Image (cartoon, rainbow, N blue to C red):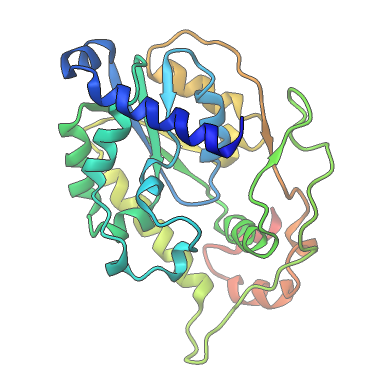
Length: 282
């Protein structure tokens, strides 16, 4: 289908969705769930599996539909993108007639909307969100390297060659190594700042959802070796029957970090004798 035809089909879909009476939309839906995560934690591969279940409409990063296309988020001033998260979710949910509606979101989207985690959670609860998933990647250094490699190569995901061959097929062309900025001119470290920011996000997230129906997933335990494990846990969490999906995405980089980070020794010195030192051995 050509891009023009795709836009026409999507436009018709939106108009039909708006014409549906709200009672019909509500009658079809059992619940809705949100996947909170930091970038490069496996939400895309998990979403590609969940979207194959006949009772799930997984909408991916719904909030990105409110961002200007073609501009890197890092270059967007906060004031330039006044995201209305509630309006976006209302629109996206209305286009779904599935039993379950799900999507994933990242901290920067809430920052653009100037919404706290607590305010965001309340907004979702008011819209019928009944289940919340927290997806975390423990190895923050691996996450940082993955993001840097994606930005340098422009390649963020790779297609799996066939079922369960997540790591064996050749990866797309990308940078052989990345250089991590270890220290700023003022002596502070962007690496440690990033690690602490991510840890604070997940700590607050767990507090915000302490009384909600919540599922905790980790990239290392549930996605890295076999992402269908994460899929199975979510399907059970939602009370649905397991239907085996096809793995369509795979890891881009499986090499040791020593072979991936150009200034590995400098990074190792930075993390030595800290609670993050173990991440170097992955």
